[in-house]
Image (cartoon, rainbow, N blue to C red; front, top):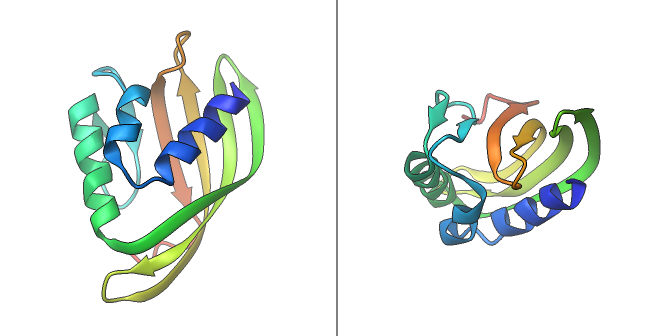
Length: 118
């Protein structure tokens, strides 16, 4: 499953929501501040489209992945890029993710070191 995280992050770094479709189902739930927790594949993809529009460019780099058991993982990411009209963006993120038995994301929650930028 660790390679699932790497593959998901590779797809995320394309900034193309079509590449993210395969990761979510109508039962998936994500929470990426400052938004509220949302569920369902279509709503999740809409959120990613909105996030991608906020940046001139952005990239994520995973540095650590820890297995928590029961198809759950905790991973640390550095993100950097340029926010539209706001300049350079850098942040450290910790993420908890749970996969289904078939490799879809059931739950994903991000925790940001710096929330002032939002």
